[in-house]
Length: 81
Picture 1 (cartoon, rainbow, N blue to C red):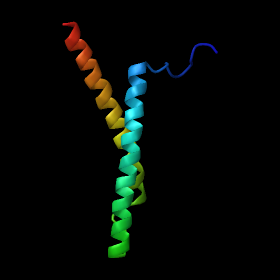
Picture 2 (picture 1 turned 90 degrees about the vertical axis):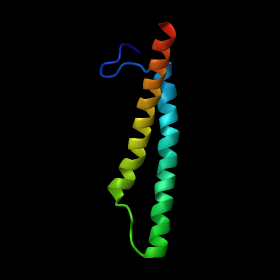
Picture 3 (picture 1 turned 120 degrees about the vertical axis):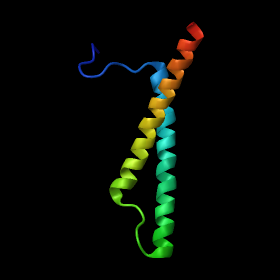
């Protein structure tokens, strides 16, 4: 297939981190949507705007992935010293 032009291949550690991030992001979406739906049902108004709903899940996924990779790299560097 050739050498990638824009992105390098992910390491297995980065893949694991991203998979964990996707799960956390998905459950963040579910939780925030549940809270928003419940608030709309009982208070007749929206608690969160659409951009907040959108960015909450993405932010949770990326932050979780970054933290997982950071912690794993710290553990590897502590093991080698």
